[in-house]
Image 1 (tube, rainbow, N blue to C red):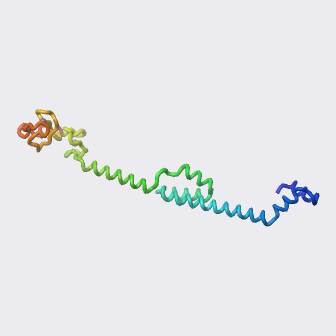
Image 2 (spheres, protein in one colour; image 1 turned 120 degrees about the vertical axis):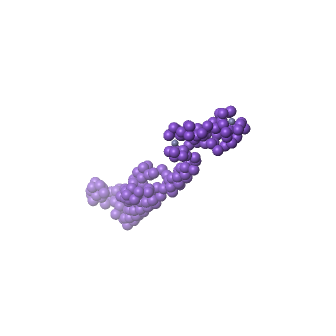
Amino acid sequence: MPHWILAVAASSDSNPFQSVLDFFTSPTWHFITLMFYFLLVVLWIACAYWVFKDARRRVDDKVILEVCVLTGIVFGPLGLIVYAIVRPPELVADRREQELEMQMMEQRLGEESRCSFCKTPVRDDYLVCPTCGRRLRTTCASCGKPIEPNWRVCPYCETDVHGAMPPVSVYDRA
Ligand SMILES: [Zn+2]
Ligand SMILES: [Zn+2]
């Protein structure tokens, strides 16, 4: 409380600040102050708890999680704002799901045909392995489309390719 209020209050009984002074020393003011502190504490705890709850779903690393929770406890509402700005954008569960999807995609890729020599993934229409140059399949003499070594007839132009196909080893460059 400023000193001049006390000085004025002491100098005269009928000063206009007397009621104000009375209010600040009254139990009502004491109660309001208490309520204010109480609400501040509640707000503080709520902020810290929210940070803890949110960080638990977003942060995988234990140390970073502890730092987040500590920020929420020490800085309260301010910590919450800082955390909300720097928190990871996605949930741990979402990230796991993405990783799983990636793994499944990689597995699907793995099921695709590979070069028998160097295991490079190759497409069905590759004639040679792009990595080691080994011949994977030959082309139809009539239409030029890629055909498998075990095919007897070209599926694109119906040409008999079984006998006409040169031995695969001729094309082996490995
Ligand atoms: Zn290869
Ligand atoms: Zn053909």
